[in-house]
Image 1 (cartoon, rainbow, N blue to C red):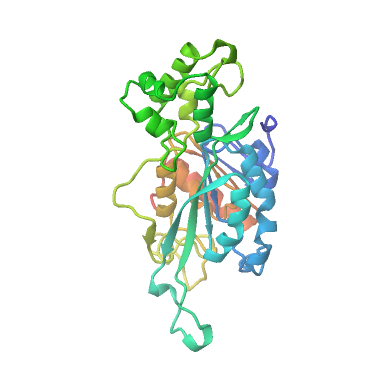
Image 2: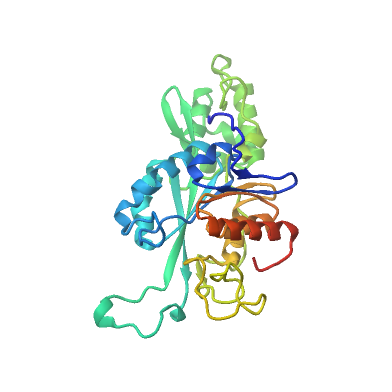
Length: 354
């Protein structure tokens, strides 16, 4: 378990606010943040895109390693991680994430379209298909249990505890009030294993502790003192709210309209006055809609969302507008200034297109 948090004065956390912005390195802030339901990572890509971003993906593992260590330390059993990067950048960091207890779920592809390519592409020069995509990779925290026999996955643990109680496998069906679904779904060691719903888990736990060998009780306990409750089991599974018709390919041009922040820290016309042609303030500002999709799918109202590499804090702004609590960090003062303004607007509901 992590040490008890202490308040860092560098975090701007005002009464009534549902967000905190740390002006500095997230490594100095993690200990002070509430444990997250979701971590949105949009850090180094290995393209030299900002000071400190490695020039190539080769050094990304070292760049991310201390952050991944903290994510793994402070994550809840149900925390999800959403890792934005290039294809090769993500592939380079994936072994580190897997070794740190993060299980790959799927890759979301942002298709920016042909318009993302500036001018004509000289195929003889690049000698590859033009790149118009980047990825956001979804991970779940690996659910494991410590036992005297070693670390076990949830699938192994469910069967192990039932057998430790001295009960025949078929009696799980009696416990759950089903014909054969309990042994076939919840106690199986086959690849097609089902996470028991809380009410079914509650029945398994109660039955094992009522009818199992009293000398080994309690069964299905995470503290060795009392059996697991339905509420505790429910909190061990990540949230998922499905949106019908939404796939893992998100087609939207890179931001150029009113949502994009320009060099003077304001948005493009027509919403604000933006004289002259100015470069975007941030090289890779993410669409707020993408962040809303992720936060809506993988968190509940009131949940904590971490954005350790805030930039303009698109994920945090989305989280606040959806009734979540956002904790972000940003080291570049200009970015942090814009992010703070953006989060304040999100708190008041002043703008929809944050």
